Image 1 (cartoon, rainbow, N blue to C red):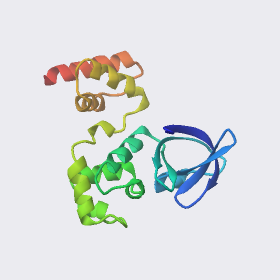
Image 2 (image 1 turned 90 degrees about the vertical axis):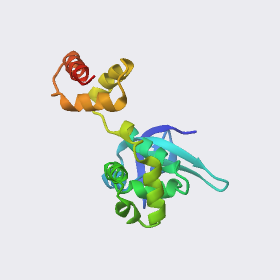
Image 3 (image 1 turned 45 degrees about the horizontal axis):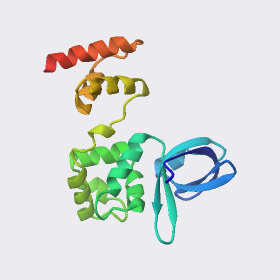
Length: 185
């Protein structure tokens, strides 16, 4: 199973790119917003899902763990395969997550191939499960892990970190987050 891949973009096509890794080209299907930002010759890395069928082996690639996580959640919904999930991801991970959180069937069903019933099923299955996919800045990942190891939930830790001002020192941010969390309990 190919879970991560890094290389140089050789070709850019409709819905996919060819990524060259050590003289081997891999076709990777990517969401439309990602495809728009890619240029031939770029060095790129993708978190990938390898979908194996009787007649094909397809790679679906995402630039961030949050996008990749949302894709994996979408394909676990009954009736949503990788191609439909990639089509849904063409809205952008933030917009999809927001539509699911708000229960907005119209946004999801506006995509070709996604009917109202499928959109309702996606919302029903995933509403409330997207909190851990909220994007966290790279500097806050260690802080988030530290707070979680102290017994705080993902949501509590993210809320606390979003309420404190960014400073240069990680220790200062951790102290501020702990003070804020201590007041809430």
